[in-house]
Amino acid sequence: MQTRSGSIIRESTKIALTSIWAHKLRAFLTLLGIIIGVASVMVVGAGIEGLQTYVTDSVSSILGSNSFIIDKYAHMGDMSEEEWELILKRNKDIKMEHVEFVKNNCPDCEVVVGEINTVRSIFFESEEIKSTHVTGATSGRILLGNQEIVEGRYFNDQEVRRSRYVCVIGWDLYDNLFQETDALGKVIKLGNEPFTVIGILEKMGSSFGQSLDNEIHIPITAFQKVYGSRRSITIRGTAVSKESFESTLDQARSAMRVSHKVKPGEDDTFGIISTEEINSFVDDFTGIIAMVVIPITLISLVVGGIVVMNIMLVSVTERTFEIGLRKALGATRQDILNQFLIESFVLAASGGLIGLITATVVSVIIELTTPMTMTVSWFYALLSIGVSGGIGLIFGIYPAYSASKLDPIEALREEK
Image (cartoon, rainbow, N blue to C red; front, side, top):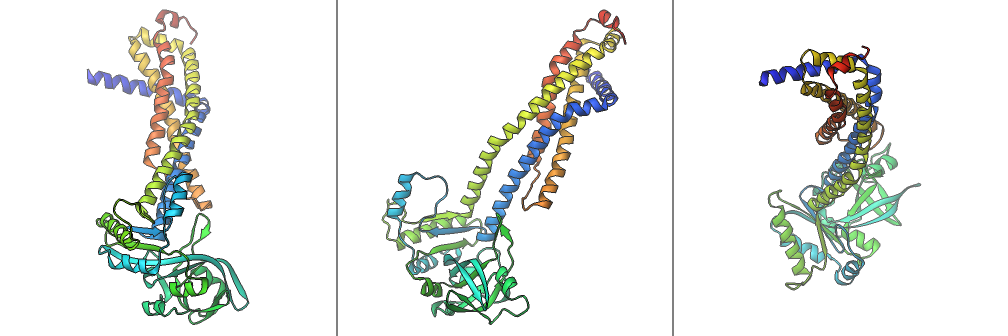
């Protein structure tokens, strides 16, 4: 029985493919709706997946993996106006003594550093670089993230303690100010204050259209001398391993609560977030985008399905004699039904496959010509082809049923 069923399906598939191939142009025009719909779903899906990958990679490269941030107002997600006002009143500044306390009381922390940031202009001789990201940091700052020193060195603990006016510059500063000369030992100015270049940072590229290389690092104590010591410090740290990250986060939070003299049961007087929370937030955000955008793009597949149903009805009318002849030779209603359902499915699935190829090509072109990352996902590929094939079956049911109901005698009276 299974052999006969398989034979019938193979024969029906062969007849369906022959019919589609005999009307190639009409089939292609019919499939345009399916092709456009599948391509739209795939390109949008690739953009969403690419955005997620891009943000995750950017976070990892900037903050490092298994890392956390403690800041006066660090927070992820939505917050009401009342909650924000409460945080503004409750949270306290973070000072150098708090950085040292967390560093000394977090045994699972691999690195703990303090940093302060601002944006200023940098001067070298007659040149000026505007909107440079200035980071005042402790000596372990270079151990965070994936950035390395390509020339020279980072400042050490002694230079931080003595507030030395030394600096490590990003690639943009090096490239724009020292194209034909050695940067090490040169003096650049932050405002009117001279800083000696002792190192050059590895090139990082850009993130969301903003350069990550227009930066300069100086000892945090020198930063406080130049820009004042009343700013709250940000604490950044990393865990020894991914497995110990949760315990590291708990230790850092506990140490910070003790250093801020927070009593048991009271809320934290600081904010703490991790790369895991940031990545989770990005996942939720892109998930919401997908939930809104993907169903909209799938509407075009429904329109394509209606077109498929219309062309299948036309096909039934054109092939009335063929249907009557097959029934006269012993084909059952189920055989005719299977034939047209398979034809409808193959037609729509072929459109899905063409749409998938089109989307892949478009995604590659977008990735090559723009900074946008496109990630073609198997999930969206299977979703698109599955939905297009399913739509072919659903919208092919009525034409197939109409064909199976034809009376063979009446059908044979039709002109071939």
